[in-house]
Length: 377
Image (cartoon, rainbow, N blue to C red; front, side):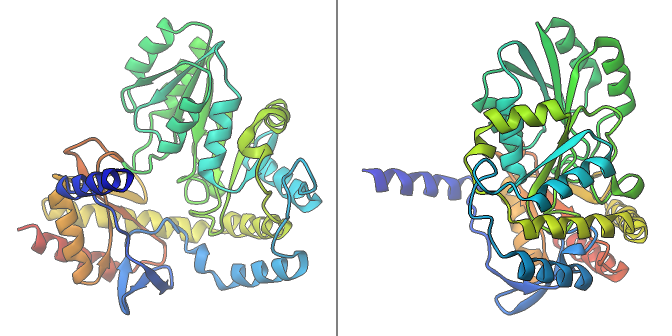
C-alpha cells in the first residue's frame, strides 16, 4: 500500500509536467557544465562572480583544510566552537556593518533557525509572498503568527502592518531568487521609520554580487540579514548578520544551530579568503551587471517577456509543460538552463530562470538568445 501511494503520486507529477529528475553533472568550469559527456553553456549556476572556480581561492581552501582538518566533529555547543570560526564571524559582521554574525552549514538551516526561534506569539511576521521556501518553513516551525503581503507591494504591507497586533516583523529578500527583482527599499525604509517594525532580509543572492564592495543592498533596513557562501561567494554554508543579543539567543534556543555539527575551522579560514576576493571584486561585479543588461536586451528584442533587475532573469513562459519542453530542447542544443515550475512559482506561471556569471562571454548570450527564439517559434 505504501509503495503504491508513492508510485501514484510520482505518476501524477509526470502527468502535470511537474516531475523532477535532475541530470547528473560530471564536471565543469563554472561557465560550462558537463553532462553525459557533453559540454553545455551553464545558465543554471549561482556562482555569479566565478569564485567557485577561482584558482587562487581553491588553493587557499586546500591549504586551510590541509592545516585544520576536514571536520569539526561536534556541534558549536560541545567542542566545535573553534577560534577560527569566531574570528571569521566577527570579520563578516564588521565588513557588512552588523554587530555580530553566526555561521551555519546551509542557508536553509539558517532561515529555519532565525524564523522558528527568534520570534514568538508576541510578534507578527509579515512576509512577501515570494520569499524562499526555507523562510516559509521556518515560519511554519515557529510559534509566531504570520501573514503574507503581495509581492513587493508596500501599500499592501502597510495595511497588514496597521492591522497587526504586537511587534511586527517584516520578512523579505533583497534580490528574489526566482523573479530576479528587488523590493522598493527606500519605501520600505520610510515605512519602517514611520511604523517601527523589525526587518529580516534574505540577501543570499545579493551578497558578493551587488552593492559597494559586494555588501548587498539592504543594510539600511535590515535588522537581521542572511547571506550564503554557496552563491556569489563560491564556497558553501551560510551566515546570519544580527545584533549580539539575537546571536546569544540563537545559541541557547535554536535547534538548527544547537543540534548540528559545526562547519570545520578550515571553512572559516577559507571564508576570510573569500571576503578578500569579494572586496576586490569590482571588475567582476561590473562585468556581471553588463552581461545581465545585455542578455535582457537580447531576449526582449526577440519578443520574450523578461523579468529581473540584476543577474537573475526570469523568462516568462506560463505552461509547465511548455517550459519543460523548451528547457529540454535547449539542453539538446548545448545549453543548461532551469525551469521553475509549481510549487516554486504559482501554477501556470512557469519560467525559464537564467543565472549569469561574470565568466560568461557575450557570444554565449547571443547564441543562447538565438537558440531560444528559434525553439519558441
